Amino acid sequence: MNYDIKDIKLAKKGALRIEWASRNMPVLGLIKQRFSKEKPLKGLKVACCLHVTTETAVLTDVLKAGGADVYLCASNPLSTQDDVAASLVKDLKISVFAVKGEDTKTYYSHIKSALAVKPDITMDDGADLVSTIHQRPVKEHANIIGGTEETTTGVIRLRALAQEGKLRYPIIAVNDAMTKHLFDNRYGTGQSTLDGIIRSTNKLIAGSNFVVCGYGWCGKGASMRANGLGAKVIVVEVDPLRALEATMDGFRVMPIKEASRIGDIFVTVTGDINVIRKEHFAVMKDGAIVANSGHFNVELDIPGLASMAKSKRATRDFVDEYTLKSNRKIFILGEGRLINLAAAEGHPASVMDMSFANQAFSAEYMARNYHRLQKQVYVVPEAIDKNIAGLKLKSMGIRIDTLTAEQKKYLASWEMGT
Image: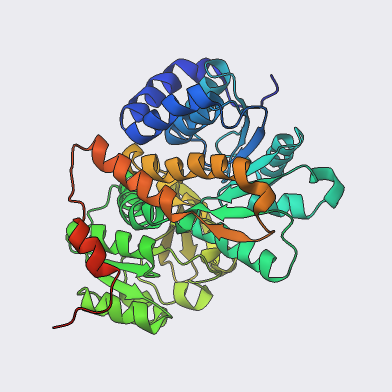
């Protein structure tokens, strides 16, 4: 096996944590049972660029049970759990190229290591893997039949590629599945973002002015959880419909220029660049805490902040203190990277159960249907989405009603009125 991890001796701890996650991922457990019998991915090499966490370990185990040869690299330099990487290599015999805290050069060398196997399917989170492929000659990866993409940021990048007619193979936008963004983005990101902020700072959330930049599903989740902990939530938006929704949900809405002056804790979840910039840092309170929960650290203009600061030091794990010329201090969490994975453990396993079920089913769908697909970004088929929701409900012991024949007929007709 070829791999590059921090320390293989961490495998025992990682195995126990993977076992814990697996207990909370019953849908993937059911998929593994079927995959083990049917081997829908037999003979296929799958290159995965995902956060190397316990939940990802459970997914890779399912893919392997389905017959795939799996190769894994990190999708963020700070998101790797080194004990999990060790267990994946030692216990599951999966090639892993990831070390928590790796520099940018190492990060991309690990991506290239995963691609060196000439994969048939790619599985991405943020589209760094696919982006790397598209910067290489076409012939180097002409054998790729399709891929999947996990997160909003990656889908944005891939749709831009497709719009320009440059996407080289079909990709399924797992992020856009209802069983992904309605639950993972909202409840997963919401809880884990607050978890990361609290672990890194030990600050009381109650009573604080908590600024959330972006009111998509991730922003809704972060706002919901901060509000539940007693924060006074302020939402920053550019979309009038989302701003109106945030207002109706009971939150204050204002431009970032105004929010910067009164916020105590800031979180960006927009997927865009330079949401919080020099002019915003310049008016923040002494002691303001700034974090990002979007996929890339570009949401915060950290170089701009550094140019304003007279000193910088690490005051806690994942907390960098920038002292401005006025002696005011601003604290950046997790180097501006995904705070829920930099300082915490990412999403709870029970919600990733649905997200990664989408990944497994989408890989199977791609393996069986790639020859009928165009070089574009596809949504997860509705049948897969509903199947996952049904399996999740079943695992929770929840039953629902079914339509009667009369109700089905009514919904399919136009004749009956008042």
